Length: 221
Image (cartoon, rainbow, N blue to C red):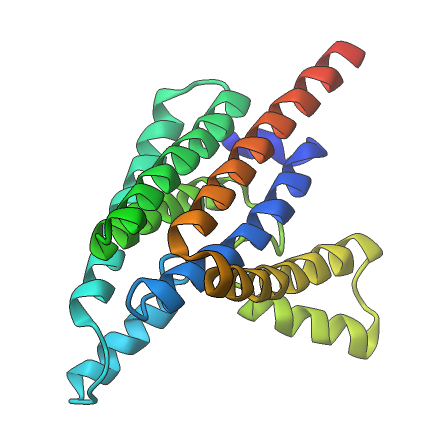
């Protein structure tokens, strides 16, 4: 049912904004919460592999905490989608949950509870990824761009894709990088707690903007 949202113009716009926020979130978690990823689980799995081989310097507890929270969030997204019949409220509900959990993470960061902050962020990213996967907007997963980058290189090499696909891929790759750069800068100058406050505010704006756009389109249609 959530797939019905794909045809609405606000969805790719919201996903583009969320991609930028993913870069910010992983910058906070990796740089300030113990070298752990909360949006990109591939990194945590690789870290656990390194640690299993005896390499020092990896926080196994943090990586496992993030993975477990992420899985729980993805399961919660499935429950949310099945509990809310209408597609727009389901997506909006996921955005609201993400913002609320980011607020919890900010409180944890201010209190020095880095495991709580990492768990709340990973839980939020699990909810988001579970929801975005159901949307199935091509090239806009909001957290992982490996395949998108490969497809973009293919576009530039043989110009086989349409302009819309290439634009989505550029937005995804550039957005994640831009978010990471901004996140690293802000963590250095503001600290993790305040950066998470900024991210939470941005998530609320994305949700509000998406909702307003959908409402206006409905009234116009």
